[in-house]
Every structure is written in C-alpha cells, then in structure tokens.
Image 1 (spheres, rainbow over the protein chains, first blue to last red):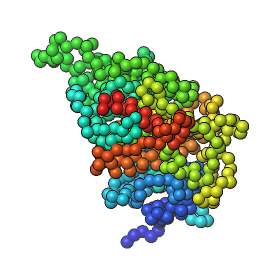
Image 2 (image 1 turned 90 degrees about the vertical axis):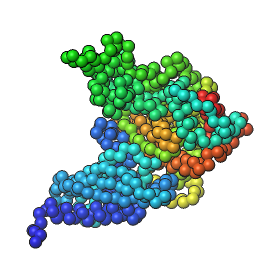
Image 3 (image 1 turned 60 degrees about the horizontal axis):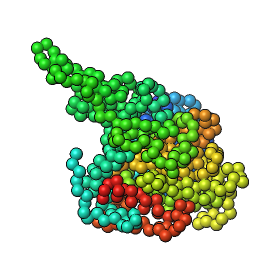
Image 4 (image 1 turned 120 degrees about the vertical axis):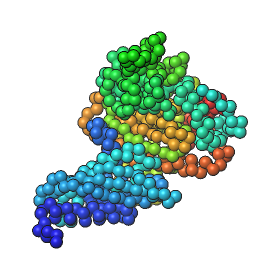
Length: 163
Length: 413
C-alpha cells in the first residue's frame, strides 16, 4: 500500500505535476493566448543559451520582465511574425523541488521539445533545464520567474513559440 | 588544390540582374567559394577584441568552413588553422579560454599561441628507438598561420599573405560607418546561434535587401508603430562592390530622439498595440540619429545597430545548403546601468527570436527549398534598375546587383 500520509514536499510535488501538465498542454495545444495566465503580473521569463549562462554573458534569446511583455510576444506571434508552421511537443522530467516555503517553491526540471513541421518529420528542437520559482496565488499556482537554460545552442531556423 | 573549370552552364543576367540558382546549391561552386573567397583574397571577421580581453585569451571559430583559432598574446593577435600538422587532428577543442600553449591530445604535439611548433614527444626517440629524422627542425614548422589585422576593435584574418591591408579592404566608403559604431571600447555581452538550411549567400543578400524590410518583417506595421520620417542611405564600397551599408537616418533632430510617435494612422487592426512599449524606447548614442544601420562586410560579417542593439553577425557556411549565423552582442565599456539594461531588453528585437529579424531565415529556407529541384532557373533583381536615386532608396536592389557583379569577378564565373 502507498503511504497516504504525505509530507508537505510530496503534496507540493503533486500540485506541481498538475501545474506543469496544464502548462505543457496549453503550449502543445496551441492555446498561446492562455500562456501569460500561467505567470504573475511581475513575472520574469528568459531563455539563455548555456554558453552565455555559464560564461556570465547576459544576453538572452528571448526575455520578458513582466506579464505585458509575455502578452506582446503572443500578439506578435499571432499577427506579425512569420515562421515555419510547426507543432511543439514538450517532455518534462526530473522535477526537483530545491526550495519549499508556504506559498512558494523553487524547482528545476529537464525538458525536451520535439518539433514537427509541415513535412511531417519530428525533430529534436531543443533540450535544456528550467529553473522556476512558482508561487501559490488566490488564482492557483503561477510562475514568478522562469529561467530556461538551453543546451541546444544552435537554434534551428528560428525561435518563436514559447516553451 | 585542384581548381575546377567554371561551369559553362552558369549564366548570370547582365549587370547583376539575374542569378542562376545553381550558385546556391552546387557543391563544386561551394568548394570554389571556399578557395577563392574564404581562403582567397578577402578578410574575414574572427572576433571582437572585447571577446579576448586578457592576454592569452583565445577563441575557436571558422573562416568559411575552415576551423581557425584566434589568440591574444603580448605580441598581438594571431590566428592559425586548427589542425595539427602531424595527423590533422583539431588542436584546440574549446570554444573560448585562456592558454599559454596548445597541445594536440592525439600525440601531444605542442604549439605556442602564435602557432609555432614547440614540442614533439619522442622526437629524439626513446632507448634504442629512433624518433623523427635527425634533420627535423621544429623551428621550421608551425600550424598554418593566417595574417591578422584589427580595425576599431574588430579582428579580421586572411589566408592571403599578399593581401592589401584590412583598412584598404574595407575602403573609404565603409570605414566611416564602421567608425560610427566602433567609436569607443566595447564590452562583449554574449552570443546567440542560429542554423539555417539555406545557402550562406541568401543571408548575405538579405542584409543588402532593404526591399524586404517592411514587407517580410511585419512587427512595426502590426503594432501600429509609426516611424518618424527617415531618409535612407543604401551604398556599396567602390573597390569590389561587395560591402554595403543600409541606414535609415533621421534628417532633423527636432524631437527627443525617441524614434516613434504615438500615431493615429489607420492600420489593419487599430486595436493592436504593444502592451509594454519599453522595448522601443531608444537612446540616441551618435550624432546622427538612425534606427537601423546594417552593414555587410564581405564575406563573413554584418555589423548592425538596431536601436540600441549592437551586434556583429558572423556568417559561417556549412555546405551549399546550410549556414550558421552567430549574433555577437556588445555594448560600450562606459555604458551606464540603464543603457546596459536597454541593450538587454532590446535584444528581443534581433537574433534568432528577434521581433524584427526572426523571419529572415524562414525566408532563406523558403528560397532554398524551392530552388533546389530546379537550379538552372534564375532570380530577377530589377528593382530600381533605372532609378538615379537608388542610393537613397530602400526598395532598390542595386546593392544586390553590385554584389553579384563582384561575386562573378572574384569567383571568375
């Protein structure tokens, strides 16, 4: 039998697993308009190539310092930017809780994104690690910060859809 | 190396007006480019001096598809082909670092940072066994050395030791524009890499192609961002016609330098506005106010100022149908905290995920995919052909025609 007397950390993990599953579903199902809703108003979101991150170089591939900038990215994605038609599929694993407070957790997780374009071939688009700060709000869990360090430093064609 | 005969079926349009698609797809032409262009009479960008701030710093990169290492020594910058003279293994295996010597891991042949051979294990043999022939003299051997010169913080190298100086190569039309951006000591902010399945020249053309700017990149139009009236400069160098600069310049400085005004012009969708326009806030840094300064230095560099983003884009061909593009971001040593933050925020405009630049590689891939099956066909580059004001036009394709004329010459096609 499973031990039903869960620790706070185990309860947090269960909530986080739902949260990440919802997050990934939003992106993979192309409901991008809902994506900023997973973040607090003052959230930061940035993607760094590992080579910059490890060397202390501050340039990011894509960065937002508040929720309005996340929304602008989606508006631009939908209305302005031109890119290969594609579907992303996220695989998230090895979720670790690195800090746990009452209403805040810090986590790291690995991710892989497979991208399928119109020719029907699926290719590994990017792998890396996410370092997240997630807070409990009256409106559910939200990212307060999401920092992604990607290993796949060569961006294939271009990067437009958030991960 | 064998120099093949130019393909007789290659027919260019008069005056650079048409390019046979074969130049984007053909392996033999690609190899000829490596020989004539990248290992020939050109200077290629290697690094910003700011990437090698300390003595003995090095960086491993490429010129064309040849692996090259650039080093900084007390005696200056050096560059050599990253290939051990013994068995041909790559000597330097790291992207960047600091080293006083370079040792091939395969048989531990040792080189100085200037490429000189310094050590050969068991050169004199061991015990009863003989090593290298007795007349082998390390001093007579080195890694293949390139000639290196710098211009205003940019490091270039050439394989051709009889080449004109870098300054002459850049020429009097291009140098003032480089001087404009490289006006003071720079600091390196990091790089972003992008990989496109298309020929490298499609990208080099793209930065000479002002015509596509507002047609492919729809960011400004979509968000109803009206630019104040700007005039255009679109010029080539007079030496080879292979370098170019396209610049949008504000004629008078009667406002605060912010390039954008709240506008009332009807657009497709009046309601689309940036929720956070911070990304467009621009600080005037130079006497002449320009939002876009895009300068292609043949064959491997695009120097760029877009708003407050400063970038050296390095083009690395990887076969006829692929290239890597590296965006090297920089600022100035004397940037204040706010300006540094602005450069980081505005990095969202450019690079592989840039609001106003991401489309370029999609466009070059659309071309590559469509031309590959029918490489005998040609492009049509007629825009502005009879326009006497082409130097002030964004839509004229005169810089592209100039490029193709220069290309035919250097390639002897």
